[in-house]
Amino acid sequence: MIATPRLTRTAGVFAVALAALVVGTAQASAGCTLAAGNSGANLTISDPTDDLTGTTSVTLKSNDGTVLTSTGLSVSAHSISLTITSEPVPTITGVNGGFDHWSGSTGGSIIPITVNGSNFFPTVTATLNGGNCNGSRANFGYNDVTSVNIGGTNSSNFTTNSDSQITVMVPQGIAGLANIIVSTADENSGAAGNNRYAYTAGGPSINGVGPNEGLTTIATSVNISGSNFIPGNWHDGTPVTTVNFPCFGNGSAKPSNVAVAAGQSASITLMTPICNQAGEGPGAVGVTVTVAGSTSGSSQYLYLSPGTPHVTGITPSTGTISSTGNTGTVLGNTPVTISGSNFIGAVAVTFGTSPATSGLRLTFESGRGFPGS
Image (cartoon, rainbow, N blue to C red; front, side):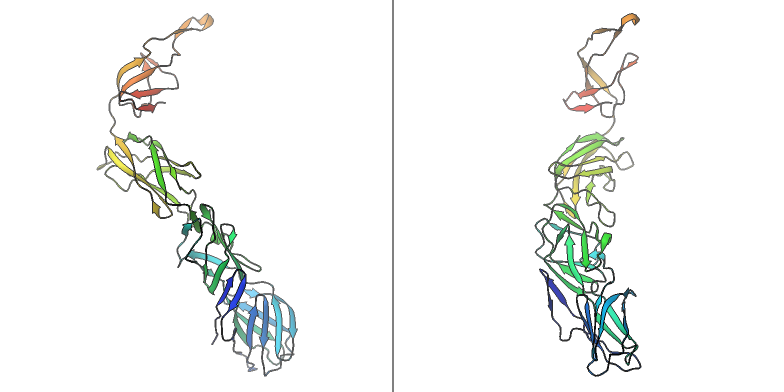
């Protein structure tokens, strides 16, 4: 039987709580009974009864098949020591029981999270070569995790529980996505821990949606202003910040071209869904933003049915004549305001048979403005 140790590193200090560090039973015909244990990269193999002096080398292989290298072999009658110079690469596969990602306050965690993966505490088999104990084996649990880093800051308190789990107190951080990196003396978990954690400064909130109305028949560009929006995607590729912007009568419709900007002036730009299918129509809907599982209050957006444009006035109603030299005179180039209704979605304005030039601004009778094209 192998006694599996539980090692705890608190602010860089290991506390080892086990009756025997690690015990391995030899399986070779020589019948040698070996015990092996490590302190960091330093490995000691002992046998109180058999002579080990003829040992020429030690083969080290972890439970995932990785062959470890070593140096500094020292052999005496009942003890062998060496220094491990390579080790299995730790890998992160999830957080808190296998979830792809997790989130928490920028102030750090009160309750630790668990980091799941492999090669945090691998079982290594040491096989002796040469001498009376040639082929004899001993197993030991190799713990060489030196740090757990979240968002660029090392945790001051973590525990390596097993080969597949570490519990860690999350340090303070800055709002946004963060990587988790598990490091040993020679290796680290690399990109497997990218975007596994998000620091939040609070739940998301919406200050306003503008414009707050648009036609059911076209995709309208909309800006959502607010706070605590986090850009980017989790490790699995899903967005950290999502927007619920349904059609009236259809909660499954989704906006497109969603872009999130963080900072003090957090905003989201998107194109509204086109809502002219059966069961959809004009009406008010509630828009919400969800960030790392927390959802904002709703802000209203009004879908309108398209109608025939109606002009009630033009200001000013007269314009100037501009000279064009030898080609004569031409009417135009006068800024005007056109008042009326049903201007949302307007794509063109003509004066007589001539199209208007650029820079249109269409004004509703109610006083609401809407940019033309």
